[in-house]
Image (cartoon, rainbow, N blue to C red):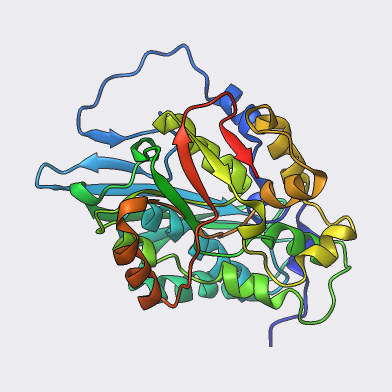
Length: 344
């Protein structure tokens, strides 16, 4: 029998809220080292895309990504499943299909049993099974805090490759999952969550973004990115800057998970959300505290931001409904302006 433990008590952060802030990450990635040009590398780190893409020379590219973090929920199996789902999302966001994964695993062996560790790995296996791929191996270390994630290899037809630099100024913007995961999981960490209120966040985090592989085949879909630790505004700004455009977000159209407002009012704001706004707030029009706390909310295994040409909505709506997604636009792209994003 697996011992009753609360994994979130063994880590200082939670999920994608553990990510280094965008501003600090930019500083870390600066280098004076000259790099070799690799013509086959179609997508690297230039525009902060979700995965790297390497051209195989036969009309397809191999995709490579990695993602890992500390516990976002207390249950070990669920933590493993969410961490794996989050890592797989990067492949779907690039328009690809995952092929296989290997695990990244850190475990405080003096604090937590191997039985609990096995439950984490089993959760990762379950997510990979849902995606139709093997969890083919991995690497583990003894670490002060629990860490789990995946390195995922995928494949994509080059014509369907989704890049942050491919959006234009005549798109509607859609999001495939509701916002507020960071607020609800922070309420759990602060021991303010009421029975059942975390369930909607867990369901969202454990849902694969497999629709991305199909959306990418539509002529009307120009690009996608997943919304994770940098919040909706952070990931949207990355696409806008890479594509040389701006965007309007219609705040009241942004879907929220149930009870997000209740816990936001109680001050359950992830530390990562505050760091997010400090990093990119100067790129955003003036916004209220409520708008900032929701739109910068650090998501874990969040939904896809999908940029769809206004002239091609019918095929997109049809495809979305096949995945049970009843979507409405939450904003639109515009020619480049002073502010990268206007919140209306």
